[in-house]
Length: 399
Image (cartoon, rainbow, N blue to C red; front, side):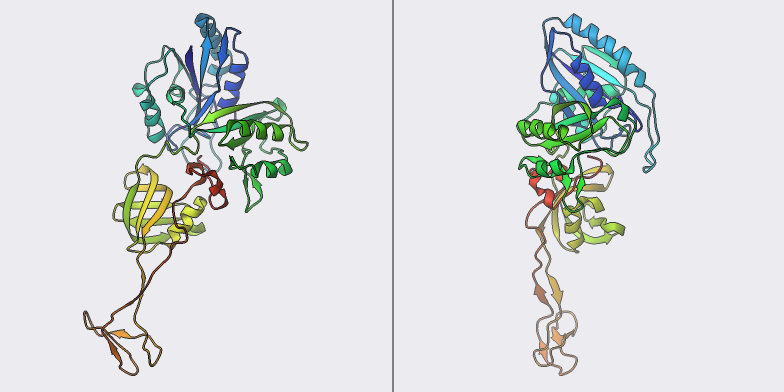
């Protein structure tokens, strides 16, 4: 028995690590049996990430390790090593792209999970990974090792991934049955299937990769059933296979501890993005963040907030979860009970006076409590402990 991991077999224009892994598992020798494969999303700001920044792993039982390793070596040479060096530039993102540098690892004993957390919460390098019993390739060994180090917990989610017919590889447009997708979206355990506000499918990539769709669910059986429904639907294009992966999506593993801060000011940008200036640094809520953005827009100086997020740069947090701990009240000068106009301050500690009838009061301010638009945590959907939050949240493209 042992653990196999694979990563970085793709570029923006071609290749697909999940499809490569699917083909590898399909061809295993009879002496080897694969358990449920796993898909692990890594640190979203990793410098050499490609599209979804996911790595693959699987536990394999075998009574002939030598035969298995010979098979892996041959598969690597024929199907994986040829991807090394392939690169494509993005047409919509200025981020630097790096050549594909596939990596595959084999561990007889599962490595310590601490490396997994290092890889999902920050940047790691090749020199820091646990030593595998056998390894192939380069940079991809980082993600491959993280995938096998993950100890799948009860809060894992599941994704049924289907791949397109070979003749459709390289095409951007996909055909998935919208009527079937609407039914899948109503299954209680599925999430991120459709954007109900735009009526747009969220299961199909937009680029030329081999993936046709990915259906996410909290329950393995529902992921399998939903994938089969969409795969066999009349208006879904042909596919060459489908497989269910356990995943760390929506587990919050990439987040560490929460942060509390006091709001100093809020800067609003085009499309609704917000920069919250706090006494603990700047917190960013992007336009695509749904409820997080809406709550951020509501904040004002003095509010006490708590949040979770990632820090690609020192002093800046990209928010993924946000809640209001306490809200400062709105303050207004008192109203004159006779003239019904706002009074004016007579100076520090001297109360207020009506500018018309000169009525005085000792009150400098009237305070009106502010009620936040959300009573508890709001979050990006893919970090949410409750996938049904999808009516108020969206998943960012990096997830």
